[in-house]
Length: 334
Image: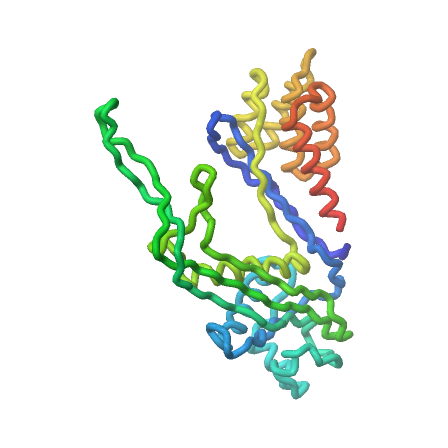
């Protein structure tokens, strides 16, 4: 893994009320890039992606994708992003243009002040609405003679309508400007259609024409999905996980109040007090593990989860917590 340092933030804490009113705690993880990016790659530039003129949006698609990548790179603060005007100036000094990178043929780069270039090409960016017979869900209102009132319900009907189908295919690559070596490459694909998107009993029904999302919303969602497939290779990704806390006695209750109130250090003290009693409850050790995990004290968190499982090996909540923690640790080692 690269020696570059990045910060793993302390978990954000919030109280959620589930259907059983069980207190919940939100953990936030920042995982390293999936690829070992060279430590000397610190300044990157993004070049407009090439796109086929026959696709919806034409050449603007490539510019929109480039802008999306720039925003994500800048937000991550993992690299320094060189703005497009400055990048153009660097290319001008070498008598190069954005077009020289369109097909990935440029090898002798050595661009001053730029460690890597991100670019790529769009092979598919398509949205289509097609007339068709669809199954749609309609609200019904029937008078019940026994109850002597109207009862609301739903009914599936086959009607004349239309469905939406959309798909996106984009090739991404990140090139080391010092060596010309491709650091990262990804052919990303994503698709969506409106058929069978809703569940009604044992039936899958379609989205009715009046509720079909417009082109802009669908394509933005697919673009985000495809871009994430590439970005997770080169920049850290943050994930949130919501877990339950277990209320087993006064100390646990006090710890939960601290945890959900944004005081994880105080919560840990309370949960450790509960775990240090003469007959410690398994939930106390589990709660310790959750807070320690949030504080990025993963070795201690794993030990606490193991203690909870030793006391109560039949509790699936503890097993899942330990499994998730080990999975996170493995991903951080990559």
